[in-house]
Length: 315
Image 1 (cartoon, rainbow, N blue to C red):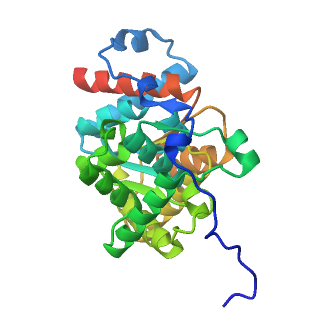
Image 2: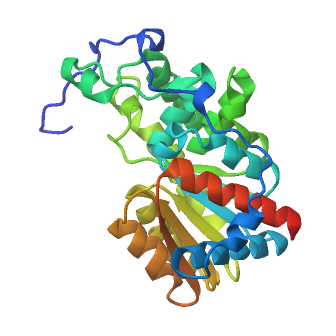
Image 3: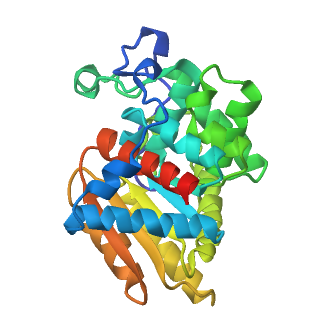
């Protein structure tokens, strides 16, 4: 038994999501439409970032045509920017073969699937201690993960399976639900203490760790396919996924799997050390190439994914 005193979480004051004002609603999400981007992309100068993006698009087309995986990692802001429909579209096309994310993605994706809205006003809620105290989201996810651990499921698989079985009202906007539906592995890499469901007495550290550790092993297995032409895209995870990716790459290589000549890219609103070093630079030193694109998610990611969809169809 620890010699240090723990706080007792039993008497937390919780409230219903029905009482919370959310900043993001599915009615504002992006819409996948047929747009002609090929002419636009081909009209760009063959210089700097325009050249790099067209090059990356070609690498993704090659991966798709040669049955090499395109794996997408993401942070929670991607969900809050309403970008799930663009990713789901490419999952359904069979273009995206794997997803990976930090724990915050499960919070926002679960709320979107169940309630059609997400993202509380953190600054205001922090003042009175109500931040993260939504009952349905946190107790719901904690129960799902406890059951998931009992059934030897990964973290992402457990939530995706639940949303599908429950026929959540907004499942068409859910990455977790659609990944599970299409049998695409969606691994979740949790840092304990960083997600609002960890604040609650219903959180079971052993279950969370068990499911997320299982997802790490699944993620490592997914990366074995990147050799010679696969693509790993990181949309907006500045810390957790760059660290997880680096460890997974070394596990794969340590076990004797060839992992060379693959391509990585980071899309983010700023240049960060870890994504630049752990995703773009270090893993591709033995072959392949890394790319870094800076810009707002709600513009850059639809531009890239819609361009990729069109280029694949026209290839």
